[in-house]
Image (cartoon, rainbow, N blue to C red; front, side, top):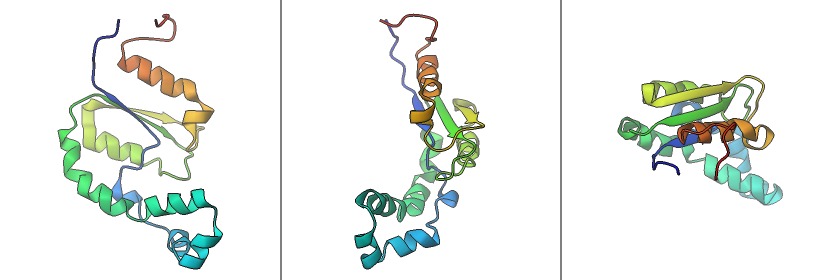
Amino acid sequence: MFKKKESSVLVSPSIDPALEKPRWYNRVASWPLIRWAIPTKLALANEELMPLEGELSKMLPLWQRVQVPVIVIQGQKDRLVSPASADFAERELGRRAKIIRVPDAGHFILWQQPSIIGDAVLSLLGQDRSRKIS
């Protein structure tokens, strides 16, 4: 049986407001004619990105309130979220954070290397892959 333990695993997280400024192509993708022409998934992703810097700035004082263990998993070749996001988590969370930097991974670690995420979750639960979980 697992002991109840609050914790968090963040995978390729967009968390540092200084790193989440919209790029030129995000601004262009917001123009109505361009937005109409691009695939819906890209348009929605762009809609989420435009206010991100401001929303993350509002969250800055809240990082000190995080009291649970946090594992941050960040690909060092991520082209969507800067690998420096892991540095931000390390600064803001200090000893509450375990940072896993994956040298040869991009943004899609969750799908390309799911065992890394599974191992992180199991470690927070006090388990390891060599033990059977029931």
